[in-house]
Length: 140
Image (cartoon, rainbow, N blue to C red; front, side, top):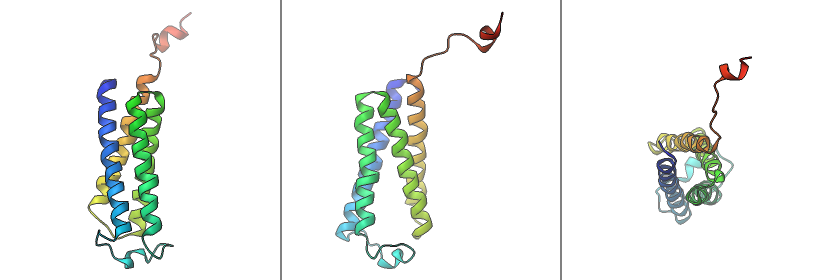
């Protein structure tokens, strides 16, 4: 994948995950997702307010910020993409331990890992290319 294709793929995935987090967070706050309060039994939360805000601000915010920074095209965009992928994957791992299973958890978890992988590939495009092989460097 070339630099432009990596950036386009990252921006698309970051916006998708960000919109998903925004939808989930707002839906939790509005009580429109059909989640049950019993699902919070293994968590420190009494209701979905704090998880909804965290999902919206932390996961959604990280993805939207990464999409913006990736669109600008700097190294920081690649680094933000890796961070957004780690945040997304971390959120899902914690959710899988605390909440009932959902088909969406592995999907979003894989998208988070994909953000890490694509962000790492994009970061590699910013690194200087090695011109000499190791053999050339150690030859007398």
